[in-house]
Image 1: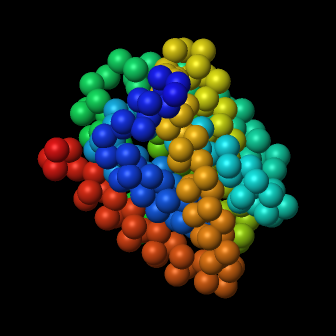
Image 2: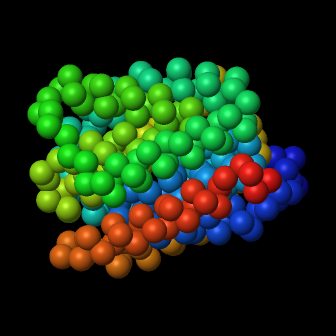
Length: 250
C-alpha cells in the first residue's frame, strides 16, 4: 500500500471528514455555493488547514462531470473566466499564509470569514457598484488570496454574485463555474509551492466519489422557483458548521 494512502486512511476523524464532504456536496449541489463553508470548519477540527484545503481542491475535480455541465449552459462564461484568471494572481499570497501561519490562527480565520459571509447574506446586503472589469479584478484577487489561505474561495465571490440583480439560475451557475475551476487550479499552484503532500492527494481521492454523489443529489433538488428555500437551508447548515468548527471544542 502506498505510504500516502496509508497516511490518508490513518487520518484522525476520517469518517467525520468524509461526512463533512458529503454534507458540503449536498449544499453545493442545490445552492451553488457553501461547500467549503460547510467542509472547512468541520474538517479542520481533525486535520491541519493545509491538508484540508489540498484534499478538498482535489475532490472538486468530480464537479467537472456532476454540476459544471448544467451550470456551463446557464452561466455568464466570459465574466466567470475573467474572475478565475484574476484569482490566480492572489493565490501565491494566500498560500504563503497557509503554509506559515499557526493552524489554530487559520482555524479562527476560517470561522471569521465564514461568519462574516453568513451575516452579510442574512442581512440581505446588496452591492451598489457596477460589474466592470476592474470590479471583477478586485473580486478575483481577493477571492484567490482568501481562498488559498483558508480554503474558503467562495465568500467574496458569493457576496459579489448574490448581491447582483441576476436571476437565481444565472447567479448560481456563475458561482459554480468559478468555484470549481478556482479549486482545481489551486492544485498546481500548491504543488509548485510544495504545499501538496502525498497524503492530501489520496485523501482527496477518498473524498472524491462521496462528494460527487452528494453534489448530484443536491443538484437534483434544485429548481429555480424554490431557490429561496434552498438558500435558507444552506444558511442553516453553514451556521451549524460554524458552531461545530469552533477551536474551543478541541
